[in-house]
Length: 132
Image (cartoon, rainbow, N blue to C red; front, side, top):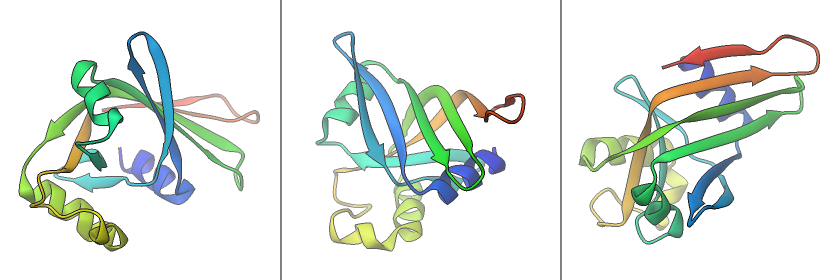
């Protein structure tokens, strides 16, 4: 899981796919965190992505490292963690978000991947799969 975290962190931006009424929805994200041996993302509870994940927690993210020519697809279930400690850890990792979010604001949402499969791929090597 640490290799997945490090890869996503290096890429900076990843694209998260969810489903709404049978329609795929994809948008850029930039938060990734390791907390208590779980891989977390962050959003706001008022955003459509939060409502989509509440209705269907299955999601996939994808990111590309142009330097190595490798991309990652991470599929799994996103589980909400409403604990202040998890939110604080995320926001401490991304202090620039503190202008918009706070662990006590009722809007900040952190979710972790469960039953996840990460596939590292490139045109130069066979895929490498990590499950957690």
